[in-house]
Structures are given as C-alpha cells and as structure tokens.
Image (cartoon, rainbow, N blue to C red; front, side):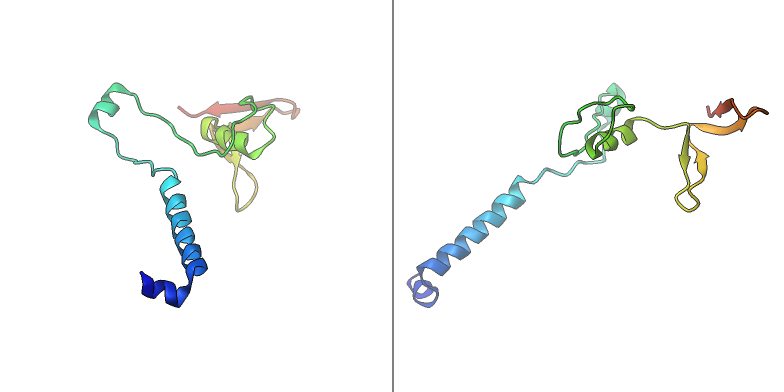
Length: 115
C-alpha cells in the first residue's frame, strides 16, 4: 500500500477509490432483470404480474386525457384501437377491427371486429 501512495499520492488514490465505489453503487442499484419464464404454479393460478418501467406515475389512464409519454406507454400496452397505422404507408391498418366500410353518404363507419 505504501508503494501505491508514493506513486499516485493520496488524492489520486482517493479519487480512484471513490470512482470505483460509485460505479459499484450504480451497477448494484439498477433494477433487476425481469424473467420471462414462469413457474407452473404461477401459470396454473393465473397470478402473473405485468411490470412496466415507466419512470413516473401517470396522471390519468383515461385515453381522452392522455397527453404525456408516461401515460402513452401504459395506454399502448393496455388498449388496442380499432385500427392502427402502417408505418410504411401511414394508411390505416387493421387493429381490433379486421375490416371497415363507409355508408354511401360517408357519414357512418361500420367496423367488423375480429374474434
């Protein structure tokens, strides 16, 4: 230890030790990985949990009041729309509805839901 102190000095050694301690703290305090495997007792009892790392509490889960990213992440995981969009064409693509049609006057839209 005295050899290290002569070469590095006390301040450098303290800086290195603090840096190592900080790295160990950050790595040990991160959230544990969620296992995708389930035990047979969990599957039989139906007691599976849905866990989402959101960062903050949502203000509302009402789809008409959602206006921020934390709520939108949960909304996208919980709700599926009648239609979604195709990212290649930006046109409507089937979601919960497998097809849809417009009335002759264009005022009514009829969705055929998938089973």
